[in-house]
Image (cartoon, rainbow, N blue to C red; front, top):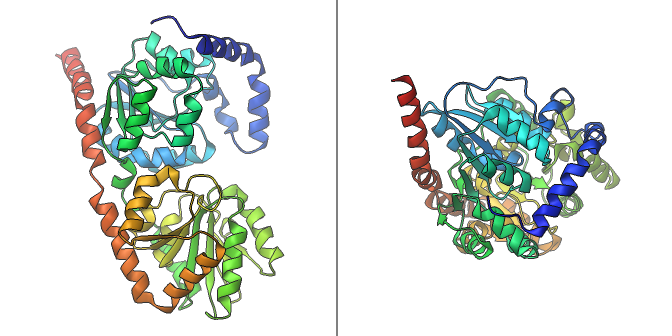
Length: 433
């Protein structure tokens, strides 16, 4: 491999020097609930699982959102008989992996980006192909994989304008890392342009894999229990909310409750561990919240129900005809609206949606979602839709049509990966011949 730029050389030196301090870091993260205590060795590149025989594809996605987006891709690759190891970096993504990964796919927590840890991981698993999801490209991970001759492909590549500007501060280092990728499969034309300008040598627009993910499931018994508890009450929801947004949603509820007696507002924080904090906000506004994490169901007197559990947005979207998608009033960049649109929700969102800019633009342009600039407009649109359910349903239908039309990324991604996967299968057949 060519000589490293000065920025990457410095990063390598600092990350090596940090290795002795990683036990302190991991212990602190365990106390904060951000690490799985029994699996800390995986963060050092160690594994209790033996590497299976035959070709192996390693796929890495940072957290829940990235893993969710590539589950259909993992299923299609595994269906070809190819062994896979999937890495993620968060406790919640580990829980999702346990629930949703296809049979035979191995999950590991990604090693910390320390050369010794990453090298240990790679030498154990010996991947024949590495797939990185969206933009989670760690320098040592790329450098060590390249040094071992592992082909690397970025799938569902995403690079916001803000990230592009940050990466541009170290152009030599970023260009060097991107040049190690065999292929960059970008989600949008804008992403492709930004990756190309930063130095990615081969970029193909395949579309956003999130558009091809099936609608999130819902446990039938849990759904029926919630429906029975809610009865015929009017319902609105706020999904994937961030700090600073729950207060806005509670304020909207206060404005709506007198006009719509019995109104129930469902709030699902993006990070379920924030449930107790959200409950404090609700209580400060004079309401008695119920928390799903405690096994509670909304009672007749419950006005705000906090769904602080993992993997249950499918329940909310099946219960609420109108949903505010969070991460958009605060400057986070917006959360994924696709699942809500697929399940027939009319969508509201704030102005900060650059994480899904093209999808939100398509939804807004087709009147399948509405951008609201402030809490007043949020309450006004919810009131309009609660008053006129037919208007709400028309918005939901338009949103559903948009996400169905924009699909196809899974097939395009697999077509781009097919030469790599076919080569692995041919090698396996030759090995058994």
